[in-house]
Structure formats: C-alpha cells, structure tokens
Amino acid sequence: MALAERIDMRDEPPPEKRDDDVVLGDDWVAPDSTVERELRESRARRGLFSLNRSPLTRKIITFNLIALNVMVAGILFLDASRDALAIQRANAAQAEIELVADVFEAQIPRTAPVNLATGDGIDVADTLDGVDLRSGTRLLVFDARNVLVGEAEGAMDPAAGRTAAEVADRPTVISDILNTVWQTVAGLFGLADGAEGMLVEDRLRQLIEEGDPRETRVVQSVSPEGGTLFTALSPILQDGNLVGVLGAVSPASEIDAAVRLERERVLQMFMIATLVSIGLSLVLASTIAHPISDLAEAAEIGRDRNRTKGQTGRIRIPDLTARPDEIGRLSGALRGMVGALYDRIDGNEQFAADVAHEIKNPLASLRSAVGSLRMVKKEEHRGKLLDVIEHDVRRLDRLVSDISNASRLDSELVKEEEQEFNLLAMIDNIAQFLGEDAKSKGIEFITDLPPRPIQINGLEARLAQVFVNLITNAISFCEDGDAIRIWARRRDNRVLVVVEDTGPGIPDQALGKIFKRFYSQRPETDFGNNSGLGLAISKQIVEAHGGVIWAENIRPTEADVTSEPLGARFVVGLPL
Image (tube, rainbow, N blue to C red; front, side, top):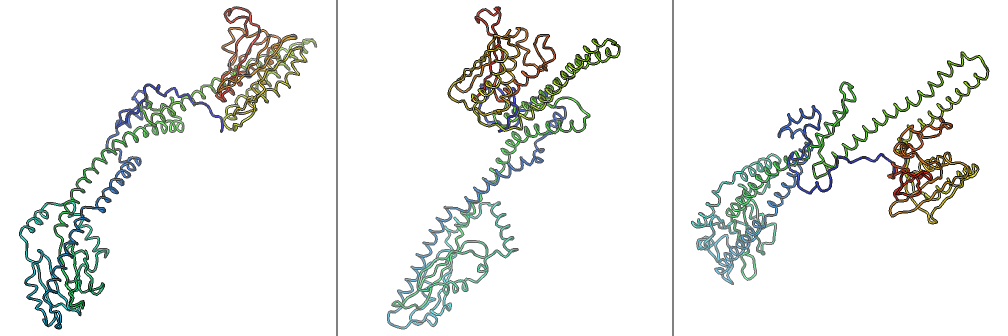
C-alpha cells in the first residue's frame, strides 16, 4: 500500500453530535457564508422542478416506481379471490350440466333404439322445455354425430340480475381505460384469440371433437365482448352407449364485475401510491442530489478558476458535516483533502522562501569574496579568499543536494510500496556500521535491542535514513569519552526506538525549532557544514508512517528542569 498524506478530518463533527436521524429534504445544508458566490446564486435559482434535470433524481424515481409496479402487477396477476370464484363457478357448471344429462338419460328407454335427431325414444324439445337454466345460460344438444338437435336458453333471474347489475353499474374508469387500450393493442398486433369470434355452436362442436365426448368437462374461455365464459360438456348415455352430448355456455358476468371492481380499487390505490412514491422520491432526491450537486459545483468552480486564472481565492467546499450520513462524511473528507492541499501549497511556498533565503547567504559570501579577490595583492590573502570561496561552493552544493532530496521526498513517499521488515535487524545493521565510526573518535557506542524481532510495515530505506541521521547527529555532537546508546522497546501496539548521547544537549530555546527546515544549532566551527534539513526530513518520514518523533534533554532529575543536561535524547514511535 502506498504511503499517502494523512488527511486531517478537522471538519468531522464530534461523535456526541452525530446521530442516526433520518435526513429529509434540505434540512442539512451548508450555510451561505461557507460557499462561493456562484454556488449561492445557483441555490437561489434552484426549485422543485430543477430536480428533473438531475439524472440521479430520475434514477431514484424510476427505481421506486419499478418496485411499485412489480408489486401491483403481482397483485393483479395472482388474484386469489378471482381464482376462488372461478373454481366455484366451474364446479357449479359441472354439477348443472351433469344434472341436465341425468334428466335426459332418465327419459331414454333402456332397450329401444334412440335417435336424438329424429326424436326416436325421446323428445328433445319437450325435455329442454322442462329444464330450468341459470340466467344467460345456453344449452345445446348434439347427437352422436355432433349434429345440433336442440337448443334452449335460461330465463332471467330477477334477484341475480339486480345483484350483477348493481356490481356492474359501479364506475370502474381506470379498468375500462386499460381494457380498451389492451383490446386496441391486441387488435392491432393480432394478439386476440381467434376462437373468441366463433359461433357458440361451432365452438362447442370443436370442443367435443378435441376431447373425449364420454367425459364431463368444464372449459373457461373469453367471450367476444371480453367477458368470461364457462363451457360445460357432458355425455348422454344409454346403457353405456353414447347417444348425444350436452353443451352449456354460461357467462360469468358477476365474476367479471367483481374482479373489475377489485382491480379498480387496486389501481386506485396504485395511483395514490404512485403519487406518494414520486413525492417521497423527490424529497429523497433533494436530500441526496442537492448536496452532491453543491459539492460538484464547488469543485467545478475551483477547476474553472484554475483554467481561466481570472479569479483568485481559495476553493471553499460546502460544509455538510452536520449531516449524520455518508454525504456528511464525504463533505468532511473533501474539506480535509482541500485543506491538506492548501497546507501543502503553503508549505511549498514557505519552503521556496526558505530555500531562497538559505541560498542567499553563501551567494552573498561568494560575491564578497570574489569582489575582494580582485583587489587583494598578497598571495596569503588570496589563498584565504579562495578557501572561503571553496567552502561556500561546497556549502551550496550540499544545500542544493539536500533541497533536491527534500523536494522529492513527498512524491517518493506516495509512490513507494510498504513492505513488512524486521525493524530491529535494520537498526542493528546501522548500529554496527556507524558504531565503528563512533569508536574511531573515542565515543562509546552501546546498543540495547530486544532478542525477539519486531515486524512492522513501512519503507525500510526511508526509516533507515531517519536512524542514520539521528545517530550521525549524535556522533557529530559527542567528543572523546562520550557515549551513545540505542535501545528499543515494544509497547502494546507501538514500538519506541531511542537514540541517547552524553553530548552537550539541546538548548532549551531550540527544542521547539530543531525539526523545522533549515534550522541548525551547531558550534561556529561547524558552520556551513549542515543544511538543517536532516531532522525535518526525518520528522516527515516518521509522520508519513503514522508515527511520532520528539527530542528532549537528559537531566539528572526530572523535577529540576534548570539543571544542566547530561545529553540529548531522540525518541521515535512507530505503530505496529
């Protein structure tokens, strides 16, 4: 994982101020004082109908309506009440046709030949006259050769007629419109069933030929007017021999009316639910789309300013951190990111100013030495001036190299990949190498590292640069007879690495400055040999790893802060 700058979430509200309340509408919006003038003007022009230009709003409304339509379609398609009524009506039609068939069979002689077409053995018309049929029911009698030999139609039942009429007279505007549309579309595209236009006689004859005429059957179909028909077929037998077939066609107008009324109620609720869903979707969309639009417009304003160069000022991201949801988190993250970018810009500007200031000192010295060189006649004076020039050139070369390394550090910390490594092994290798240099100067070098390895994730080369810098600094401040001690300890979820020396310590006024760029606290004899960037770079590397670094003096007793220091101590804390 690449190391990246840790974003300061200073805009994140404290935990006690956040809750899980539902955000509706534009209740949580950034105050006008925290946004750009262009964004305030855009808000002033914003209205309810401006949401129709938002793709996000259209998606929210569309998906909500899709779910509602699927639910309503399922209710209409899986209509349990209609199925129950249809089953009851089919059972009644079957019982009715079987009862009529029993009437015919009761009048047929057992031994004499029977011909329904000629009336031998039974008078079909007389038998039909004695049968009471349901209102609207047509009864057709076919002989064994499927020739129609008789027909009767049921008389109107006043009570049933009034009940069906009362149900049918109730207004069903939505259902009627949908039925009309469906019939029109079916007619245009040929989706209608061709059998609906057939005559009843032909339809019954076709059903007899398609099935077994000796079996009683009930078939549900659709009438030419779009209503439901129940067709019942039953054989007429004489000692097991087929002599004819009875067919009854009965319209189910009361079922159609009840189903149509039920669908009308469902569709009415669907219309109300659709309006409510659209309204709630608009409220939800305003809660989501408007804040995101504000964030996008603020970013676009900054982008346009960067392109045109005509306007100045910092980009201000709307402060939506009061929202207890992901948009509040996004606003806080964007504000923190923009703040970090401006901090980086300010740091680069300050760095450039510091670089210019630091380079001016050796350049001024060089200018003075070169000017004096032209006027000096004595060889010994010319030699001293040449030494000064050589020293300043080396100082400039060292300064430029350190500045170049410091300027590349940020990008390298982002690009390089973290790896797991043994921190103690790396410190031990550095201590063995630099310990020889310290011992050659009469400095005692002590290492106190735990026996067990400590694995951390990070950039091994960069962290090695930190400890090399701390140890070389300690060596440079120590004299013959001093000592340097490096020790490490593991503490729960972190590890502490300490570099101590018995040198002169750190002046109290310098403790808060030594990690600043170009600051150096060294003797006059060592002037110009350091750029003052080492500790600043070390601090940047440690903080990029999520750690901390600080410096302090070693005193005989912590209670007496005025006592002379016994040396300096640098502590590096790294997370595990």
